[in-house]
Amino acid sequence: MSRPYNFSAGPAALPEAVLKQAREELLDWNGAGASVLELSHRGPEFMRAAEKAEADLRTLLSVPDDYAVLFLQGGATTQQALIPLNFAAPGQAADYVLTGHWGATAIKQAQPYVDARIAADTADGGYRGLPMRADWALSEGAAYVHYTANETIHGVEFNEIPEVGDVPLIGDFSSSIASGPLDVSRFGVIYAGAQKNLGPVGLTVVIIRRDLLTQTGQARAPILDYAAHERAGSMLNTPPTFNWYLAGLMFQWMLDEGGVEEFARRSAVKSQLLYAAIDGSGGFYRNTVERTARSRMNVVFSLHDENLDARFLEQARAAGLISLKGHRVLGGMRASIYNAMPVSGAQALADFMADFQQRNG
Ligand code: PMP
Image (cartoon, rainbow, N blue to C red; front, top):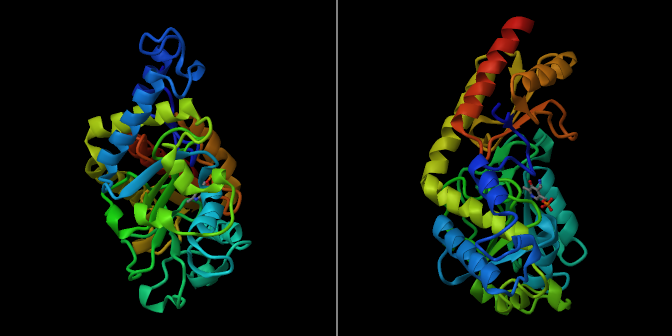
């Protein structure tokens, strides 16, 4: 019996090949006589795996040499607090572009340290679109501009990198990293919790233009200092070794599958299948995000009658489609279709939606 298609928003599905490899290697990792969970992070086995993971991620994302790649703990939320601490003077202005729930979280985490200003937002429209670049009110002397590349809950995604001039651009790519080619050189910092497109929860990838690591920022302990983490090779303290290892398997898998160009192609196919199912349903299913802002990663939809929600979820599960319940902030449904979701999964969901409508329309 094959496993169901899992549309969880994060922690999200991992490729079966990755899970099987981890299972096979669990008791005796590469002849080390112990599992990766039981070995020192400074031992030769783990050091090799850690270095390979970084090299593979650099290849996958085409990270230029003048960018550091850090493997940290604390999730994306912790980075949202570390960013002002590391890159802004106390109380300095920092611009935030707010297109959904996670942008608001970023502002909340930064507020104790900077004058966090909302340069543009789409709150009035219920976060259903993207603010026109021409309307952004960027501050004089801002330390950086922060935006959320893909809003995981609202299902809104930027389809291009905003131009902000010489101010460092900081992007939260937690739910869209590695889903397509990205010009890293346009950014000061890119950060992403790994539990969606990159694999396991418990690991956060932070990509930082190296010149920013010399900034004074604000008083902080070494453990909150990106430069200290960089100098220590992300081993300032004990790193989450299993998660790092598992992410490494995922990076290798993504390279073997054809890299980010291939995932961009699959993401377009998967998301178009689902949006077509919604748009072609005559209002039985609804997605209210402006078409040009629709996320390729998180397809948010509601049924025309919420009394059908429980039946939809139950029958979906019976059809081998799990974790479709929407986030509590919006209700309804959400299908997250990250890199580990095959096209056949999106097709199966689209087919199920048509079938469910026929039986309940
Ligand atoms: N930003 C985005 C876009 C997210 O989707 C999430 C988590 N769903 C976060 C930030 C917060 O991440 P974490 O739970 O890793 O702190």
